[in-house]
Image (cartoon, rainbow, N blue to C red; front, side, top):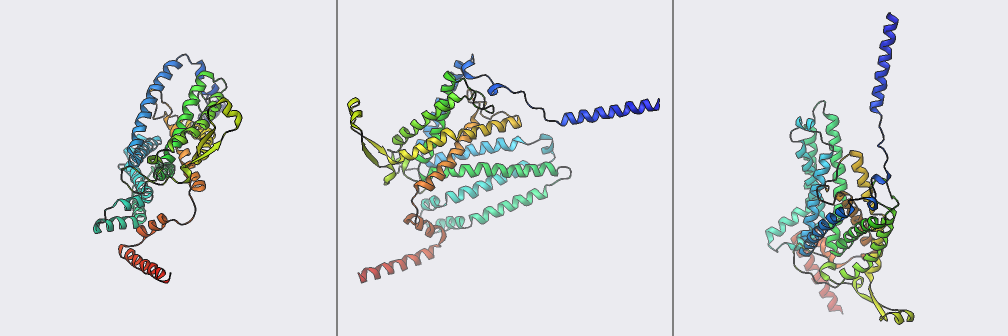
Length: 423
């Protein structure tokens, strides 16, 4: 009897161990073709398309209004989007039970967020801020000192947050707190690294923000439309209802749109001129060779069929083709990454509450990837190398005190007078 009891107990223990092992195993999700029903086979596709079209018109209208209002308002829009993204990402790994035992811990996340915001935007907008300040001695010195010590201020704010985190550590909560600390820093890197390039593009000229953003929107719209009517071949399981037909059709449309849209946007100085201050007035500047027209004579056989003998093309249109190629081939992978991320954590997109736009995070990831490429491309292949008057003035105004600037002006005047005297 004892042996039988021992055998029964051991078999029961073995079954429990097996159940525990099975409970720890990751059960793969049942595979579905392309993540769901293709649009071409969806019975409610026309209702969905009408809702999507209606909300898209409103969103594009609001976006156009913000662009018309100018650089500062576009930057404010980017900041608002950043805050909403950070809020959603902060909440992703939070647990209500643990947060009840950590009062003020959520406030710590926002402390790091606004410290990072002060660091990034302080460096990006320092020169426009100096150019916007009135020549009053006190205000000018205050702004100059703030810019000069901005990095130190941000560093000590971060150290204060670090000490705050250490002092709030609680027993049996260490793992959760350190996980949140690491997650917060990853959010800051992802959000601010990419959005800082977006703001830099805005002040280089709205053209370099508007064209890449428009190409992502065009690519997304035509991927949906072509897939809606002709999509048959699934593209990738991570992103539901994406098809090869939609991907290829959107790529061709985006390339054509990039070439045409660059010609239209390049005609307005309000869009092409860089903003050197924080004012909201209209801009006028020398557009430079990038936005000047070059005329090409068409072959004779074309003029026989069409009334044109020559065409004019802006130099920037050739660069726009590179942006269009990136927006068509590479940028969509940012959306695929967002789709996989949401599935990994089993969360809904915070754009699901907007009718017909249940993938806003995917599009924002595409926009961020595109913004980084646009900035790198602009700085690598378009901006002229070497020292310019603007760069020297930037160094003089931000690095020298008012007395040092007066001394520099006096010495420079003496040098120029000596040269004029010898000539």
